[in-house]
Length: 297
Image 1 (cartoon, rainbow, N blue to C red):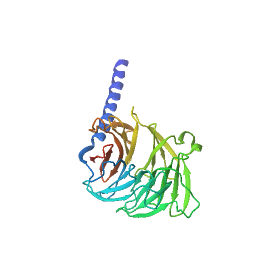
Image 2: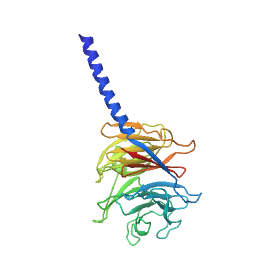
Image 3: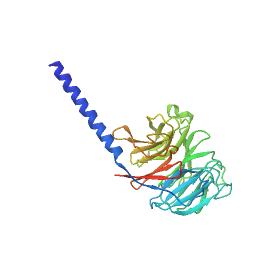
Image 4: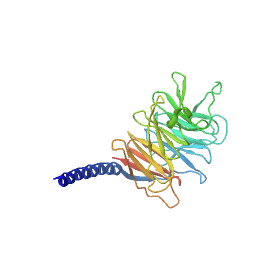
């Protein structure tokens, strides 16, 4: 009798694990390869670092070699170029990150110029933060988020913290610094916000620290990979993380609390450097300046 009960319990556990594994596998398989985009024309010396995609399907790339911004249509045809190396308005010294989550405004983290620049969707320069006429200063912005509520979240390398500016209230706050204990940021690379308003901070170690929009710690995840992480893109409540080596992409299901690989065909010398998700499509930027597109079904 006791052996029979043990067998029944083991069978139930096996079935539960099987169902969970099938669900997570199906979630990863919901990304279906669509096409590869070769943005053109671009100079051979171009070195794209970050990708952003608008609700209109336009693709934006930052070039950290020539310190420029590029916009392309959905097929990879060049639309506009702006920027160039310098310190004046509309110029850059290492544009590390882009964000266009607010729809019409493109926000650029201008790292060595210690500022955030704002452009319209046609790459016309609009403004700079902080305003040169104010006393507030910003140091080494690595990553940036602009929300529809007028909140600007900036990942600063100087103190390894997130600066929150509520533009409508002219209110500035900070979180994630040394006073946050186990949630204090360590070598942060990137910040992104999901559909729930949760801020995800990707660290060089592969840890993803999570905060709400007011800076309250929510928890963290560990990316289960023996490879350097390069980027992160929220997909609804879930996450996509790109890696330097195979399998190149890991997908996290928040409902199943599990990771699954998404195999991406890469050349021997190529690797993924940035990811963006918009309108049910996942865009993966490679080190060879190609963009691999997946449909999310």
